[in-house]
Image (cartoon, rainbow, N blue to C red; front, side, top):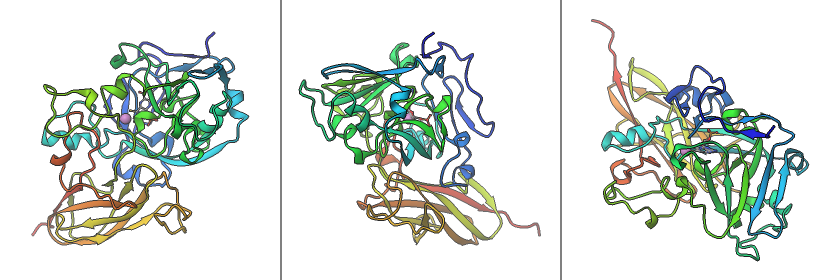
Length: 394
Ligand SMILES: Nc1nc2c(c(=O)[nH]1)N[C@H]1C(S)=C(S)[C@@H](COP(=O)(O)O)O[C@H]1N2
Ligand SMILES: [Mo]
């Protein structure tokens, strides 16, 4: 009996929470309602977005499950769960965001290809597992290694799920070896999410979590780790999840001109309101999230209730009673989102807007047109929602 198997159809999918909005059924892609997303700092597993490219793998025998570490190293090694469990356990609070978050809105200006997502293709979880830097030491790669003696410079993660983009082959991605062996980068081989063993949708029994980087590099259902000379040549690294300018379309694209997207840019969205809202005049609370990639904090979130003419600064928070400060010295979770809140008096129909600024003073672009790209990734334009006043009958 093998440790982990990959079904080729959807007859053995796990149960999912009925509140999720399903964007694609097979493979299963779903996100929570906006308001549920910002109801807590740590996203409950049930509400955490699910982004899959094939049927969900199944563990048949956890004792036999192992990950082979191979490639440009002296000796390959099979790592079993007991080996992973015997390494120091680290917990990292990190926001995972799909590069396709807010794709539906980008598609409205000009059509893009890909699964449509509203603003909830992200979640914040407490990931528990071993640091990849510690795991790689088991095969003789020291901390902070740029290149192995035999020229390995990248760490490729290969799964076993059957993806149609890979012609039935597994999902895979890579990160630079220097990031993988840097304990400060907090790259995990995670076996827990919010204190519970990972569930099937999120990568049981073992997944990669690469904090601050688009979700696509956090490979689920890990099967092998390859130390390689060049970055992974898989579909999702080379023919997808790359950022192109608005002038590039399907008839003139040359994929090799761009690098695979890694860090995500500064992002925010209002989650207490839908795209169009009918409300009574009076006080409202505007709530949402802001997050940036690469471990950059959120310096400021600005909210406007007049379509972006004037702004007020929103209150930012992570944990109750702990002031949020966007500084590496502070006791903030550097890989995690911040939630924001602002109160406003609404006395006419208007557009409410949010934009965030990160600790490197990067700011979200005003309009989606300037960042439009054919795959509809990284829509980080100012988030705008309409409020229309309903007047009591006269
Ligand atoms: N094996 C495997 N890993 C994967 C994927 C996948 O389809 N197969 N999807 C990736 C993408 S695009 C994202 S955004 C995240 C989603 O993780 P989640 O479903 O736990 O939210 O997983 C990544 N890892
Ligand atoms: Mo993604």
